[in-house]
Amino acid sequence: MTQPVLQVSNVSKAYRQYSSELARVLNWFGLSTKPATETWVLQNVSFEIAAGEAVGIVGQNGAGKSTLLKLITGTQRPTEGTIAVNGRIAAILELGMGFNPEFTGRQNVYHSAGLMGFSKSEIDSVVAEVEDFAEIGDYFDQPVCTYSSGMQMRVAFSVVTAFRPEILIVDEALSVGDAYFQHKSFSKIREFQEKGTTLLIVSHDRGAIQGLCDRAILLNHGTVIRDADPESVIDYYNALIAEKENSKTETRKLESGKIQTISGSGEARVIDTALLNANKEVVEFINVGEIVTLSIKVKAEKYLPKLALGYMIKDHLGQTMYGTNTWHTQQVMHDVECDSIIIYNIKFLANLGPGTYSVSTALVSSDTHLVDNYEWRDLACVFSVTNVDKIHFSGSSWLQPNIEIETHLQTV
Image (cartoon, rainbow, N blue to C red):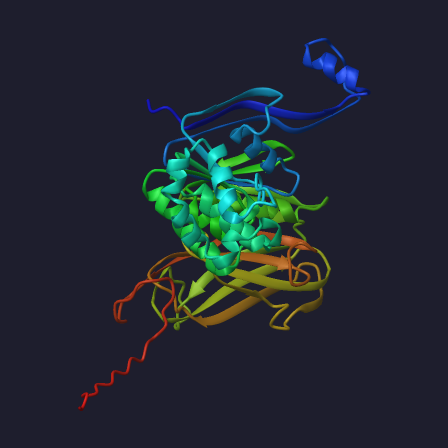
């Protein structure tokens, strides 16, 4: 059996404060001294990651994500449990971590790469490449204290990825970069993945997790509560965020094998969802660009002062293709009586690329499910798009082209 590149076994981490420095020192030497306060930020965390696997870590602020990464990289030690790493780790955990603000970008490249264990000759061979990738111009030879946060991110990412690691760990640091450099960074990460690098990434960006990762782990209050495919984990995470005292979250395994997440107070619920063709027939397969109607039947289980329906069309990776709600279309319903049945018929051109898609629904009182989440339902409807009569194209959207070609003869 292949040895995992990373094995986290029953790891817990506590931050302790002692009544005095003497009590702390005595504790270092194994003499029993009880801490004045003890806060556990991780408890019994266990998982394994195989070579070449890409895993996302998600969770709300304070869930323990950054602490876990610090334990894996060795910048902190676990209070309990063990972490086994098989390979060289490269990590971007905190913006500019390890940079000397008085050093130039170039000097910090030598300093940081040296701390990573590379010789001067090895760093010499890549410093020009680092400078080119960072694209900060003359600032590369200016002190880092003159850099913007985005410029620091560019240099930090460039030096960490100058040598391909066995394991690449990326925290939220990439989120401070501009859109151009984010695309460039993710392309580099994908290039490493293709060459066998294992990826561990912490991000609140659903697109990044689902676009890069094979698997996701959800941390909540320092414990692992989900470890599965990215789509189902992110769906459950969204339900967790919206959870209120009177809310509940449930998961169901559908016939397709996918895990459906339903959350909310239950004050309103979707009782039927179907995709209809022009003849008002229920269909599961449609043509690229076909006119279809998404029909959603809702029942109010209680009197509702306001009711809005939101819907989202997602591809097979869970990436959002389109979403809106009746708050934005100014069609909020007011004073909805208990037991009312409301049918929403949403007509649109299915200008989607060939593939499988799903629909998520949200019953709320405003523009977000974070205020009143009556019901959030993933995989409410699944359908497939095929290309029957359009020209061949690639991508997730059908953008009908009108290509004009002009020919000119050059005269002397």
